[in-house]
Image 1 (cartoon, helix red, strand yellow):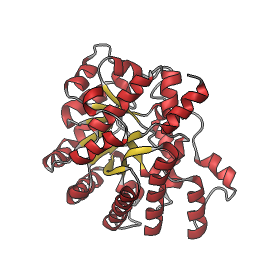
Image 2: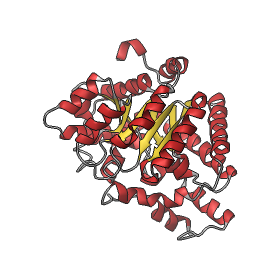
Image 3: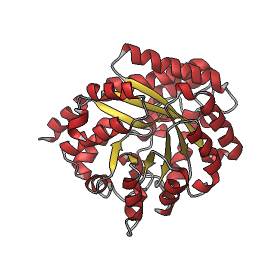
Length: 347
């Protein structure tokens, strides 16, 4: 298949997305429009110049360096109208530009809203938007609540309480932010409450530092999925890979994000193909598409052209994502139909 043929094939392919932050879906034009409407300080009012400042085109020095670039997006959630607009645009872009049919969106209330806006009212707006979008378009949607580690234990407790209070309208819980500075042992009690409430857990782990972070995450927090998980490839003993497989954990890989944050030395060195061929379940995500200047079309192309996946392995990733999504069983079954996959024939 030619490059043009591959790209056309990928654009048309119905896709699942399990790892996408609402805060990373704010369009550059929306950042500018909100800033002008709300009288916010902004580094440039020239659309092209602002876009270049906003998006990340080159590798950062570290994960923390990349995270520091999210200020413009974070500051765009000024009013409830802004929350509604940004959520709708995130859904619209996923469906219209990438043909996403299964969309799990996640957000950190403390990071995204802080004390500017009421968490519950904002959540109700976000939930209403995705429910309305789901009814209008062939996209199955769900929300995951994130706790941002760098905001401290009190924030973690508040976020966990918020998730439990809204457990009927969320599909999962997540820990994000720097794993090196905030190891999993800090959150055992808090995550115990999440498990007790029956909320599925995914954890950002293995994106920085060494493989031991992942080993501790699996042992102490018992997630169903792990966001990124790249450092499992660095464990020469194979114990982390074995733990991932033994516990049926899906790795939510995000190739371009992993390259920009220096989780991998190059796109070609990304262990996605290695993981799949060793029996690990993996999905492919775009993470923060607007800020990282990517989307699932690009991620799938990189997976084939640079990482070396076959089209059959792309289908396997799509099937793993559908099977490991946090949506209820009826929606999960419908997701396989929307993705054009045979649930019993491909897994």
